[in-house]
Image (cartoon, rainbow, N blue to C red; front, side, top):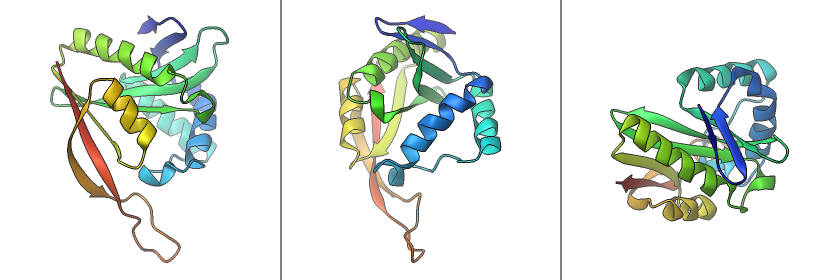
Length: 170
């Protein structure tokens, strides 16, 4: 699968993309938003395995800059019985510049048409303001919230946060 936008080239993620994903994973794991998601692996074999699994799913897409071919992030979907859950991760150097919006808009259109999807969902921490804003710009609306935890503090206590469940219907 290959798609293009004004500034981006979007293609199916490949198992060979693992080294570029390693950089994105390291960047994300060091971000203030990492506490709101499951940690990415940090060893080469684990990153290679996860990237291969992502690629095999057929629903993970590499996002590259047209002018440099640099892999700057990915967009993914999980099929939940006909409702597709949207996910994304972009290197912080490329956040806030409209790349995620551009890539997600293109892929939402593509998935909607190719798979006849009527509903999309997405989840993010309510404290992740940039992600909440992106989802709203993509036409998603907050439907409900839930308390989640992906990490523990140094004393072993769960780090709880409020997660939002967003939906987009067409």
